[in-house]
Image 1 (spheres, rainbow, N blue to C red):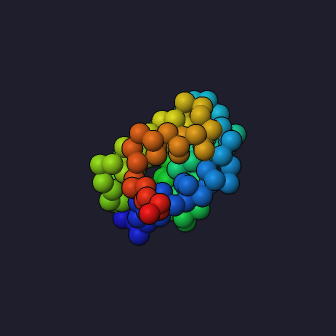
Image 2 (image 1 turned 90 degrees about the vertical axis):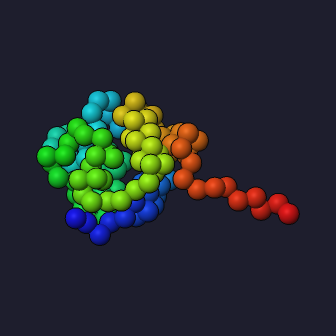
Amino acid sequence: MTDITFKDIEAEVRKLAAERPDFEYPEGSCYYNPSTFPRKPSCLFGQAFINLGEPVPESYENIPITTVMRRLGIRFTEQEGYWAGTVQNQQDGSHPWGKAIALGDKWHPLHEETDTAA
């Protein structure tokens, strides 16, 4: 069990993508933990977990982010799971991090846009 929430993960993933929107993870399987395959950096979610002080265990490599979160006891809604899965899949498909987030937001929005025009 971890004290990390989905909101923590989402915020860190968004921060990382904003810092490096054009970063493309090397094609192939996403590695959450860079010690698993030292020549590859950790993926977007893996880096988020590292930054939050809870690296994903090496035994969780090559499983979907929703399964990782479930195993770690992180609660999330169905929509949050769809969003996270989409972002991960887009990154794995060699889309830059910024585009992966944008597609997750487009296909599975987590936050309603507020109409500020009155």
